[in-house]
Every structure is written in structure tokens, then in C-alpha cells.
Amino acid sequence: MPAWMSPYLFGRQRLSGPDPDHGSYRSFASFKDPDGNGWLFQEVTARLPGRIDPATTTFESAKTLACALRRAAAAHGHYEKRIGTEDPDWSNWYAEYMVREQAGQELPQ
Image (cartoon, rainbow, N blue to C red; front, side, top):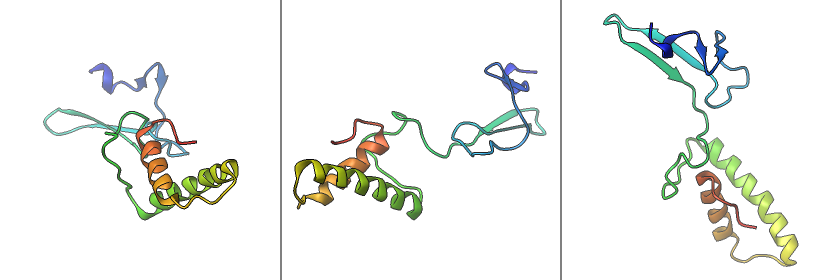
């Protein structure tokens, strides 16, 4: 049996079923097809920083977009407190924050 199909992965024994927290890169499933090919699937719910093309920004659902908007709004609120005034260019600030966050880059302050 190939090493990647063994019940051990990175020195740990795999447990049956999904990761209870559905953490990205933590749940696996494997099987052999009728031709004898081995398959290993991994649950990926969020990409690691640097694993996404920074020139591309996508959101897999309205829910993830809304969550990104809430995080940007909270960060922007801190930014406005620091500058001591309303930011008339808030939409550009939100956009820059969300693109950088998704690309795993340093966030605007």
C-alpha cells in the first residue's frame, strides 16, 4: 500500500469522520476505485495566506462577503478613530482591506 494511503498522515493517526470544527486542511477521505487507483480528498474551507493569486479576489458566497465587509467595517472604525475624522473615501479603504486580507498581505492601518 502506498504511504499516502496509510492511516497515518504527518505522524498522526487519522480519525474517522470530519474535523469537528471543519477546520481547513483538517478533514480527509480516501478510497480505491475499481481500477485500483487510490484517491485522497481534503476539505479546504479557507485557503492559507499566499495560496491565492493576489490579483484575483473572489468570495464563495454572500455570507463570506458579508463577513469580510463586517471585518473591514470594524477595522475602518478603528482607522477613523485614529485619524479623528470621517473618511469620505471609505469604500476604497474597505476594498483595499478586503483584497489584502484575502491575499494574505499586510492590512491597511
